[in-house]
Length: 356
Image (tube, rainbow, N blue to C red; front, side, top):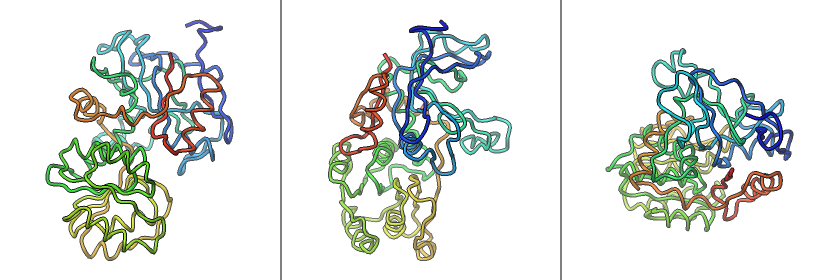
Protein backbone atom coordinates (compact mmCIF):
# COMPACT_ATOMS: atom_id res chain seq x y z
CA UNK A 1 0.00 0.00 0.00
CA UNK A 2 1.33 3.41 -0.95
CA UNK A 3 2.56 5.79 1.71
CA UNK A 4 1.09 8.98 0.32
CA UNK A 5 -1.26 10.59 -2.17
CA UNK A 6 -4.47 8.83 -3.12
CA UNK A 7 -3.20 5.44 -1.80
CA UNK A 8 -2.97 6.65 1.80
CA UNK A 9 -5.51 5.00 4.04
CA UNK A 10 -7.98 7.61 5.26
CA UNK A 11 -10.64 7.30 7.97
CA UNK A 12 -13.32 9.36 9.71
CA UNK A 13 -11.92 10.28 13.12
CA UNK A 14 -14.04 11.42 16.05
CA UNK A 15 -11.95 14.22 17.58
CA UNK A 16 -14.45 15.82 19.97
CA UNK A 17 -18.14 16.59 20.47
CA UNK A 18 -19.70 17.14 17.03
CA UNK A 19 -16.25 17.02 15.45
CA UNK A 20 -15.43 14.45 12.75
CA UNK A 21 -12.46 14.75 10.44
CA UNK A 22 -11.12 12.57 7.64
CA UNK A 23 -7.48 11.91 8.46
CA UNK A 24 -4.81 9.27 7.72
CA UNK A 25 -5.28 5.94 9.51
CA UNK A 26 -2.29 3.63 9.81
CA UNK A 27 -3.30 0.00 9.67
CA UNK A 28 -1.78 -2.68 11.92
CA UNK A 29 0.41 -5.34 10.35
CA UNK A 30 -1.48 -8.16 8.66
CA UNK A 31 -1.39 -11.24 10.92
CA UNK A 32 -1.40 -14.80 9.52
CA UNK A 33 -5.14 -15.19 10.21
CA UNK A 34 -6.12 -11.64 9.18
CA UNK A 35 -7.40 -10.07 6.00
CA UNK A 36 -7.16 -6.52 4.68
CA UNK A 37 -10.53 -5.29 3.47
CA UNK A 38 -11.33 -2.29 1.30
CA UNK A 39 -14.50 -0.83 2.78
CA UNK A 40 -17.37 -0.28 0.35
CA UNK A 41 -20.49 0.18 2.51
CA UNK A 42 -20.64 1.51 6.09
CA UNK A 43 -23.88 2.34 7.93
CA UNK A 44 -24.41 4.86 10.73
CA UNK A 45 -25.67 3.36 13.99
CA UNK A 46 -27.29 5.05 16.97
CA UNK A 47 -24.14 4.38 19.00
CA UNK A 48 -22.07 6.33 16.44
CA UNK A 49 -24.44 9.27 16.92
CA UNK A 50 -24.18 8.98 20.73
CA UNK A 51 -20.38 9.14 20.51
CA UNK A 52 -20.54 12.13 18.18
CA UNK A 53 -22.97 14.09 20.37
CA UNK A 54 -21.63 13.20 23.84
CA UNK A 55 -18.31 11.31 23.38
CA UNK A 56 -19.84 8.40 25.24
CA UNK A 57 -22.35 5.56 24.87
CA UNK A 58 -23.54 3.86 28.07
CA UNK A 59 -20.33 3.17 30.05
CA UNK A 60 -17.99 3.51 27.07
CA UNK A 61 -16.23 6.90 27.00
CA UNK A 62 -14.11 8.30 24.14
CA UNK A 63 -10.94 9.66 25.76
CA UNK A 64 -8.75 10.03 22.66
CA UNK A 65 -9.34 10.39 18.90
CA UNK A 66 -11.16 7.33 17.51
CA UNK A 67 -12.13 6.09 14.05
CA UNK A 68 -15.91 5.70 13.98
CA UNK A 69 -18.23 3.15 12.31
CA UNK A 70 -18.95 -0.59 12.70
CA UNK A 71 -21.75 -1.63 10.29
CA UNK A 72 -19.71 -2.57 7.26
CA UNK A 73 -18.94 -4.66 4.20
CA UNK A 74 -16.17 -4.56 1.64
CA UNK A 75 -13.84 -6.43 -0.70
CA UNK A 76 -10.81 -8.51 0.34
CA UNK A 77 -7.54 -6.92 -0.81
CA UNK A 78 -4.99 -9.15 0.92
CA UNK A 79 -5.05 -12.30 3.07
CA UNK A 80 -2.69 -13.56 5.77
CA UNK A 81 -0.56 -16.64 5.19
CA UNK A 82 -2.84 -19.00 7.15
CA UNK A 83 -6.14 -17.83 5.65
CA UNK A 84 -7.68 -20.65 3.60
CA UNK A 85 -11.34 -19.58 3.23
CA UNK A 86 -11.04 -16.17 1.55
CA UNK A 87 -9.14 -14.75 -1.42
CA UNK A 88 -8.57 -11.23 -2.75
CA UNK A 89 -11.67 -10.03 -4.59
CA UNK A 90 -14.16 -11.78 -2.27
CA UNK A 91 -17.01 -9.55 -1.08
CA UNK A 92 -17.52 -9.87 2.67
CA UNK A 93 -19.62 -8.62 5.58
CA UNK A 94 -17.63 -7.97 8.74
CA UNK A 95 -18.72 -8.96 12.24
CA UNK A 96 -17.23 -6.10 14.28
CA UNK A 97 -16.41 -7.76 17.61
CA UNK A 98 -13.20 -9.70 18.31
CA UNK A 99 -13.52 -11.79 21.48
CA UNK A 100 -10.65 -13.49 23.35
CA UNK A 101 -11.84 -17.12 22.78
CA UNK A 102 -10.17 -18.05 26.08
CA UNK A 103 -12.55 -16.93 28.86
CA UNK A 104 -15.38 -19.07 30.25
CA UNK A 105 -18.03 -17.04 28.39
CA UNK A 106 -16.26 -17.53 25.07
CA UNK A 107 -15.78 -21.24 25.76
CA UNK A 108 -19.48 -21.72 26.46
CA UNK A 109 -20.37 -19.96 23.21
CA UNK A 110 -21.54 -16.64 24.66
CA UNK A 111 -18.65 -14.73 23.15
CA UNK A 112 -20.75 -11.55 22.82
CA UNK A 113 -20.37 -11.17 26.62
CA UNK A 114 -16.56 -11.56 26.57
CA UNK A 115 -15.04 -8.99 28.97
CA UNK A 116 -12.02 -8.61 26.64
CA UNK A 117 -14.15 -7.89 23.54
CA UNK A 118 -12.50 -5.57 21.01
CA UNK A 119 -15.38 -4.05 19.05
CA UNK A 120 -15.13 -1.61 16.13
CA UNK A 121 -15.62 1.99 17.30
CA UNK A 122 -16.04 1.12 20.97
CA UNK A 123 -13.34 3.00 22.90
CA UNK A 124 -10.43 2.57 22.71
CA UNK A 125 -10.82 0.36 19.60
CA UNK A 126 -10.92 2.06 16.19
CA UNK A 127 -13.86 1.53 13.84
CA UNK A 128 -14.33 0.85 10.15
CA UNK A 129 -15.39 4.09 8.44
CA UNK A 130 -12.14 4.03 6.50
CA UNK A 131 -10.77 3.15 3.09
CA UNK A 132 -9.33 -0.09 4.47
CA UNK A 133 -9.26 -2.10 7.69
CA UNK A 134 -7.49 -5.21 8.94
CA UNK A 135 -9.76 -7.83 10.55
CA UNK A 136 -9.68 -11.55 11.48
CA UNK A 137 -10.68 -13.72 8.52
CA UNK A 138 -13.08 -15.79 10.65
CA UNK A 139 -15.15 -12.64 11.26
CA UNK A 140 -15.47 -11.87 7.53
CA UNK A 141 -18.41 -13.63 5.86
CA UNK A 142 -18.51 -14.11 2.11
CA UNK A 143 -21.58 -12.57 0.47
CA UNK A 144 -23.80 -14.69 -1.79
CA UNK A 145 -23.79 -13.45 -5.41
CA UNK A 146 -27.31 -11.97 -5.15
CA UNK A 147 -26.50 -9.86 -2.06
CA UNK A 148 -25.22 -6.27 -2.38
CA UNK A 149 -22.44 -4.80 -0.25
CA UNK A 150 -25.00 -2.45 1.35
CA UNK A 151 -27.06 -5.47 2.38
CA UNK A 152 -23.88 -7.02 3.74
CA UNK A 153 -23.40 -3.98 5.98
CA UNK A 154 -27.01 -4.40 7.16
CA UNK A 155 -26.14 -7.79 8.68
CA UNK A 156 -24.94 -5.88 11.74
CA UNK A 157 -28.21 -4.15 12.74
CA UNK A 158 -30.28 -7.16 11.65
CA UNK A 159 -28.12 -9.34 13.92
CA UNK A 160 -29.52 -7.50 16.94
CA UNK A 161 -33.06 -8.52 15.93
CA UNK A 162 -31.99 -12.09 15.14
CA UNK A 163 -30.23 -12.48 18.49
CA UNK A 164 -33.28 -11.06 20.30
CA UNK A 165 -35.57 -13.55 18.52
CA UNK A 166 -33.29 -16.44 19.44
CA UNK A 167 -33.12 -15.34 23.09
CA UNK A 168 -36.94 -15.13 23.23
CA UNK A 169 -37.46 -18.42 21.31
CA UNK A 170 -39.66 -16.81 18.66
CA UNK A 171 -41.43 -19.27 16.39
CA UNK A 172 -44.64 -19.91 14.41
CA UNK A 173 -46.79 -19.80 17.56
CA UNK A 174 -45.35 -16.56 19.00
CA UNK A 175 -47.44 -13.39 18.83
CA UNK A 176 -45.07 -10.42 18.97
CA UNK A 177 -45.26 -6.84 20.24
CA UNK A 178 -42.44 -4.50 19.16
CA UNK A 179 -42.13 -1.19 21.03
CA UNK A 180 -40.26 1.38 18.96
CA UNK A 181 -40.20 1.60 15.16
CA UNK A 182 -36.70 2.98 14.80
CA UNK A 183 -34.01 1.04 12.91
CA UNK A 184 -33.66 -1.65 15.60
CA UNK A 185 -37.42 -2.01 16.07
CA UNK A 186 -37.83 -2.43 12.32
CA UNK A 187 -35.09 -5.09 11.99
CA UNK A 188 -36.62 -6.89 14.99
CA UNK A 189 -39.96 -6.87 13.15
CA UNK A 190 -38.28 -8.34 10.04
CA UNK A 191 -36.40 -10.94 12.08
CA UNK A 192 -39.51 -12.02 14.01
CA UNK A 193 -41.40 -12.54 10.77
CA UNK A 194 -38.53 -14.57 9.31
CA UNK A 195 -38.54 -16.70 12.48
CA UNK A 196 -42.19 -17.49 11.77
CA UNK A 197 -44.10 -15.14 14.09
CA UNK A 198 -47.74 -15.21 12.87
CA UNK A 199 -48.85 -11.84 14.22
CA UNK A 200 -46.79 -8.74 14.95
CA UNK A 201 -48.00 -5.43 16.40
CA UNK A 202 -45.57 -2.50 16.46
CA UNK A 203 -46.01 0.76 18.37
CA UNK A 204 -44.33 4.16 18.22
CA UNK A 205 -45.02 7.84 18.85
CA UNK A 206 -44.15 8.78 15.25
CA UNK A 207 -46.61 8.42 12.35
CA UNK A 208 -43.93 8.20 9.65
CA UNK A 209 -42.05 5.37 11.34
CA UNK A 210 -45.31 3.50 11.89
CA UNK A 211 -46.13 3.84 8.19
CA UNK A 212 -42.73 2.32 7.35
CA UNK A 213 -43.41 -0.54 9.78
CA UNK A 214 -46.74 -1.20 8.09
CA UNK A 215 -45.07 -1.33 4.66
CA UNK A 216 -42.49 -3.77 6.05
CA UNK A 217 -45.25 -6.17 7.08
CA UNK A 218 -46.50 -5.30 10.57
CA UNK A 219 -50.02 -6.71 11.02
CA UNK A 220 -51.13 -3.73 13.12
CA UNK A 221 -49.59 -0.41 14.11
CA UNK A 222 -50.53 1.55 17.22
CA UNK A 223 -49.59 5.16 17.90
CA UNK A 224 -48.87 5.57 21.59
CA UNK A 225 -48.44 8.51 23.94
CA UNK A 226 -45.14 9.77 25.35
CA UNK A 227 -46.76 10.31 28.77
CA UNK A 228 -46.23 7.72 31.50
CA UNK A 229 -49.76 8.26 32.85
CA UNK A 230 -51.17 6.92 29.56
CA UNK A 231 -49.64 3.45 29.96
CA UNK A 232 -52.95 1.77 30.91
CA UNK A 233 -54.77 3.25 27.89
CA UNK A 234 -51.90 2.29 25.57
CA UNK A 235 -51.89 -1.28 26.89
CA UNK A 236 -55.62 -1.55 26.24
CA UNK A 237 -55.21 -0.31 22.66
CA UNK A 238 -52.25 -2.63 22.03
CA UNK A 239 -54.04 -5.71 23.35
CA UNK A 240 -57.08 -4.83 21.27
CA UNK A 241 -54.88 -4.53 18.16
CA UNK A 242 -53.28 -7.91 18.86
CA UNK A 243 -56.66 -9.58 19.34
CA UNK A 244 -55.11 -12.26 21.54
CA UNK A 245 -52.35 -12.85 24.05
CA UNK A 246 -48.95 -11.20 23.51
CA UNK A 247 -46.36 -13.94 23.93
CA UNK A 248 -43.21 -11.86 23.54
CA UNK A 249 -42.68 -8.10 23.75
CA UNK A 250 -39.48 -6.54 22.42
CA UNK A 251 -38.73 -3.14 23.96
CA UNK A 252 -36.55 -1.59 21.27
CA UNK A 253 -36.49 1.85 22.93
CA UNK A 254 -35.59 1.15 26.55
CA UNK A 255 -37.46 3.87 28.45
CA UNK A 256 -39.58 3.75 31.62
CA UNK A 257 -42.70 4.21 29.49
CA UNK A 258 -41.91 1.50 26.92
CA UNK A 259 -40.76 -1.07 29.47
CA UNK A 260 -43.80 -0.42 31.70
CA UNK A 261 -46.04 -0.86 28.65
CA UNK A 262 -44.28 -4.09 27.65
CA UNK A 263 -44.53 -5.59 31.14
CA UNK A 264 -48.23 -4.76 31.38
CA UNK A 265 -49.19 -5.80 27.86
CA UNK A 266 -47.50 -9.20 27.81
CA UNK A 267 -49.66 -12.21 28.70
CA UNK A 268 -49.09 -14.16 31.94
CA UNK A 269 -46.20 -16.56 31.37
CA UNK A 270 -44.89 -14.49 28.44
CA UNK A 271 -41.56 -12.78 27.92
CA UNK A 272 -40.29 -9.22 27.68
CA UNK A 273 -36.97 -8.77 25.89
CA UNK A 274 -35.14 -5.50 26.55
CA UNK A 275 -33.33 -4.61 23.33
CA UNK A 276 -33.04 -0.81 23.43
CA UNK A 277 -30.99 1.03 26.03
CA UNK A 278 -32.61 4.46 26.17
CA UNK A 279 -32.38 4.82 29.95
CA UNK A 280 -29.46 3.60 32.05
CA UNK A 281 -31.84 3.03 34.96
CA UNK A 282 -35.61 2.55 34.98
CA UNK A 283 -38.48 2.57 37.42
CA UNK A 284 -40.97 -0.05 36.20
CA UNK A 285 -43.82 -2.13 37.71
CA UNK A 286 -41.76 -5.31 38.04
CA UNK A 287 -43.66 -6.87 40.96
CA UNK A 288 -47.04 -7.21 39.15
CA UNK A 289 -45.21 -8.63 36.14
CA UNK A 290 -43.35 -11.13 38.34
CA UNK A 291 -46.65 -12.18 39.90
CA UNK A 292 -47.83 -13.04 36.36
CA UNK A 293 -44.55 -14.92 35.73
CA UNK A 294 -43.49 -12.62 32.94
CA UNK A 295 -39.82 -13.32 32.19
CA UNK A 296 -37.52 -10.37 31.50
CA UNK A 297 -34.67 -11.13 29.09
CA UNK A 298 -31.69 -8.93 28.31
CA UNK A 299 -29.62 -8.96 25.14
CA UNK A 300 -26.21 -7.56 24.33
CA UNK A 301 -25.23 -7.33 20.69
CA UNK A 302 -25.31 -10.82 19.10
CA UNK A 303 -23.44 -14.08 18.50
CA UNK A 304 -23.19 -16.37 15.47
CA UNK A 305 -25.76 -14.39 13.49
CA UNK A 306 -24.02 -13.44 10.23
CA UNK A 307 -24.59 -16.78 8.40
CA UNK A 308 -28.31 -16.71 9.22
CA UNK A 309 -28.67 -13.03 8.24
CA UNK A 310 -27.02 -13.73 4.89
CA UNK A 311 -29.28 -16.74 4.34
CA UNK A 312 -32.36 -14.63 5.09
CA UNK A 313 -31.16 -12.12 2.48
CA UNK A 314 -30.18 -14.77 -0.09
CA UNK A 315 -33.51 -16.59 0.16
CA UNK A 316 -35.57 -13.40 0.12
CA UNK A 317 -37.06 -14.06 3.56
CA UNK A 318 -35.86 -10.61 4.62
CA UNK A 319 -35.47 -7.50 2.47
CA UNK A 320 -33.56 -4.73 4.26
CA UNK A 321 -33.15 -2.52 1.22
CA UNK A 322 -36.19 -0.30 2.08
CA UNK A 323 -34.49 0.61 5.37
CA UNK A 324 -31.60 2.33 3.58
CA UNK A 325 -33.05 5.80 3.06
CA UNK A 326 -29.98 8.01 2.57
CA UNK A 327 -26.62 7.49 0.88
CA UNK A 328 -23.43 9.56 1.05
CA UNK A 329 -19.92 9.39 -0.33
CA UNK A 330 -16.72 9.56 1.70
CA UNK A 331 -15.63 13.21 1.66
CA UNK A 332 -15.30 15.58 4.64
CA UNK A 333 -18.45 17.43 3.59
CA UNK A 334 -20.48 14.26 3.01
CA UNK A 335 -19.41 12.65 6.28
CA UNK A 336 -20.64 15.73 8.15
CA UNK A 337 -23.90 15.83 6.15
CA UNK A 338 -24.50 12.11 6.69
CA UNK A 339 -24.24 12.39 10.47
CA UNK A 340 -26.41 15.54 10.47
CA UNK A 341 -29.03 13.58 8.52
CA UNK A 342 -28.88 10.68 10.97
CA UNK A 343 -29.10 12.99 14.01
CA UNK A 344 -32.04 14.90 12.52
CA UNK A 345 -34.11 11.74 12.14
CA UNK A 346 -37.34 12.59 10.33
CA UNK A 347 -37.54 10.33 7.30
CA UNK A 348 -34.00 8.97 7.84
CA UNK A 349 -33.89 5.34 8.90
CA UNK A 350 -30.53 3.92 7.85
CA UNK A 351 -27.89 6.31 6.52
CA UNK A 352 -25.23 4.52 4.44
CA UNK A 353 -21.79 5.52 3.21
CA UNK A 354 -20.73 4.25 -0.22
CA UNK A 355 -16.91 4.27 -0.34
CA UNK A 356 -16.30 4.02 -4.07
